[in-house]
Length: 218
Picture 1 (cartoon, one colour):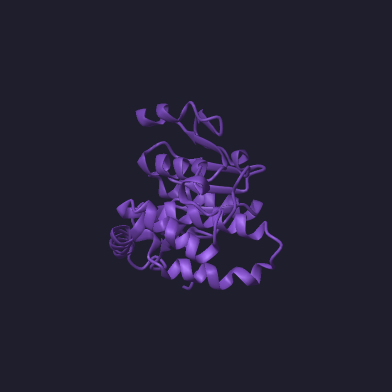
Picture 2 (picture 1 turned 90 degrees about the vertical axis):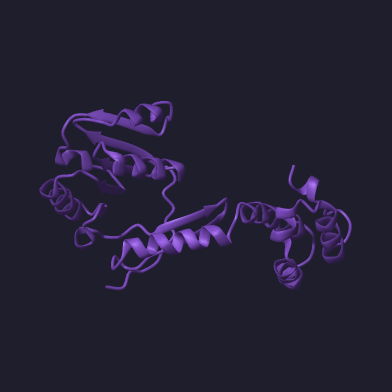
C-alpha cells in the first residue's frame, strides 16, 4: 500500500486517545505538542500520566471507552492492548467519519504515523509504509546524527531574515537568489561552531546592513 504523505494541522482540533499505557502516553504528548485538544480515556493510567495534568489541552477520563467518546472528534488514536477493542474503535470511527490510527494495526488505520526527527521548524518523517518500523527507526537515528540542533536555529534565522526581507518594497522573487546563497553557505555549520562574526559577514555580503544575527534572533 502507498500512503499519501501529508503534514496535518491539528491546532485546536479535538482528538481522542484510548489507552493508558506507554504508547498512549507518547501519542497524547505528541498531539498536545502540536496544539491539539486531547482527551484520553482509559480505565487505568500509568503513573507518568500525572506529569501531563498541568497541560490545559489534555483531559484525562478514568473509565472504560464508550462509542460516544468519538462524538465531535477530529481524530482518534486507539492505543490499548486489546485488539478487539482497537478494531471496534476503528469501525466506529469509520462510521462517524473520524480520522483513525490504531497502534500496530495498519490495516485498521486511515493513516499511519511515521518515525520523526524534529529540529525546531524542521520536521523529517520516515515511513516504510508499515513494512519495517524497525528500519524506519534506524533511518530516523541516522538523520538525527546528520541534522543536529543547529538546523532548528538555522530555520529560525531564515524565518526572521525572510520576514525582514519581504517587509521591504521588493517583490519576493527578487530575494530568491539571496536565500539560495544562504542555504549553500554552510550557515548551519557556522551556527554549530558559534561563529557569529562569520554569520554576520555572510548576512552583510548577502543582504547588506541591518541583518545581524543577534538582533534577528532576539
